[in-house]
Structures are given as C-alpha cells and as structure tokens.
Length: 204
Image (cartoon, rainbow, N blue to C red):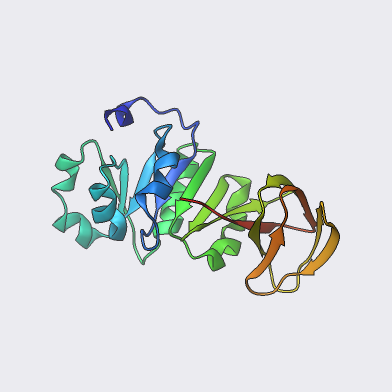
C-alpha cells in the first residue's frame, strides 16, 4: 500500500485498532480505501503487519517500545506513542483530537464500553466495531435509515424507551441488555431521548 504515504489532511475517519480478535482483514479493508491515519495498540501490531498495512502510530508501553524498536525502521515512518496503565483507547482518542481529526473507526472495543465514549462525541464522530457488529451513536434523538430485512441491536442504558417506526407500524421498545429487533426491508426511524447506539451486522 504505497499510497499510504500520501499527505493526509485528516478528512477521512482515522482507524484505531485495539484488538483483532473476531475481526478479519475483509472487514477492515473498506475502511482503508481512503488512506486513513492508522493507530494500532501494541497487542494488535503483529496481526495488522501480517495484513500488509502500513501503520502510522503504535500505541505502546515502554517495554514494548524497547523490545520492538526495530519496527521504527521496518515500518518507517511509523512512530510510537507512549501509553501507561493500559490506556490505549484514551491515548489514541486524545491524539486524534489534538491532531484535528474529526472522526474515527474503533476496531476491537467491547460495545459495553461505548457509553464511556460519549463525552468524546463533542470532539469526534465515533463508530465502534465489536466482532461482526458496527455500533454508531445517535446524538440528536432521531435515526432514519433504509435497511434490508435484518436484525439490529438497540444499545442504550437499561430501561431506555425508544420508539420504532417502520413499514410494519409503530412500536415502543424498552432497552434491556442486548436488545435486538427485526426490521423489514425499507425505512426504519428510531426516536429516543438522549444518546443511544445502533448495532448493525456487517456482511464481511
């Protein structure tokens, strides 16, 4: 991917890979199409390198940096960003905000942690990939999208009330842990108060 050396203007969503468990290269490949800034946590580095992708920034604790110093040459112009106390996600997001990125796809984050990200939504548009499901926040209380016949996950604090409007009519749903709903082909509108998240299966 020699094109990865093009000058970047932070217009494309960055890619932050924390973990590759349950994630295939085929899922990640479409996100690389526009040569995003690529940040990778130390545990995911071997797999990402095996995919043949050029890494921009490795989030790494000091021990990892010392024992993998050769990566600075092999993956040039990669850089290390120091991390302490397992704060790979926090450090990655702070770097992206500081470097004026507007959006990021986060790969390999447990979707149960998305609520912790909500203070960041003021600064970054976030999409979280957890295994085969992509989660994105609805910040203005209303979501509207055309879906094929599928099932989607409604992810919000326990007890949140959401209104679903579809070709089948209207339905009120109280969100519990892992609330999935079946949607028919067509436009689905989901309304609620506060921020809620939609989980969508990706067919990669």
